[in-house]
Length: 389
Image (cartoon, rainbow, N blue to C red):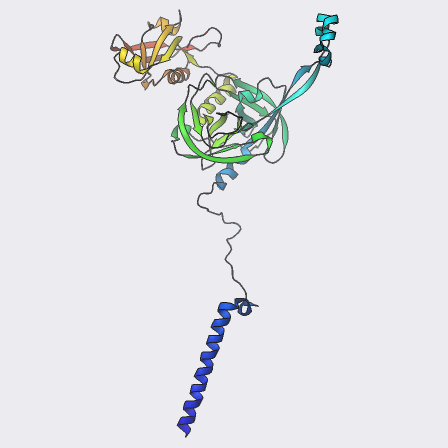
């Protein structure tokens, strides 16, 4: 009897436990909030001092470079005639004629907007020449909201670069990178103030290097990128993923004024060379030999029996120029300058420009299907008027 009682009690206990577990299971599935009330949820939080490392994020680069990019506001005064409505009235023109042209005009401010990059803690700012050209007043706005007046230190229209200065110290200067190490496909960020909406960062890649024949500047060696560059970005920074300057945003290809994914930046290496010359000399001095050159076309390469389409054809030589004194002739093909191959006429122009005046340089040319080495004394590039390259 006792054993049967024990078995019955154990069976009741087992059934009760099974029923409770089944009830908990049902509650867990269909009414989870009932069981979770009053429980403490433990959430892991990254420490505030730790830097977030997000795959595909460029926040570190942007945060590093953005304080070095400024907004530039320029203004110039233009004459406005208060009697313009009378000048356009044919009745007044009939009776008063040319006397209306002598009416005094008034001045009215004309504003424009661009960007710039702080390149020294002492207040030097690099921008595009077309941003500050012909400006009567220049004002810059720092990323922290401060505004200051600026003055032009020097300009170089041939590369569309200008250096301006504000009276301030301890400014957040950008770090330069070697643009010569860029490769097509590298990720880059463009920082500027497009359309005046405020400082903006856009992301893209290097689409091409050494772009020329664009008709933008005399010396063209652009970085092409699909990072959005819009009006107001001119003079802003093109940076790498470490936040270092690789280019100065300069121009866009556009049919409607907005970005179409084709933007151009002046390489940082070239910008630094121009900047340093402006600081040390107040102007930019370039080499010059006095020739007129054109690209080698497939037809010319075949005609001159060249093994490949490369070099620059000398179409003309300026009398008494360094090239004339060295014996260069029209019809010669320039193949190398100081051991560096000449790819095309813009490339030739850039190779000569970096040479110092009065120094000797070695040229390799092709003449009458023969390769010749010519020594030439580099001249100083004159002003654009009546000048051949």
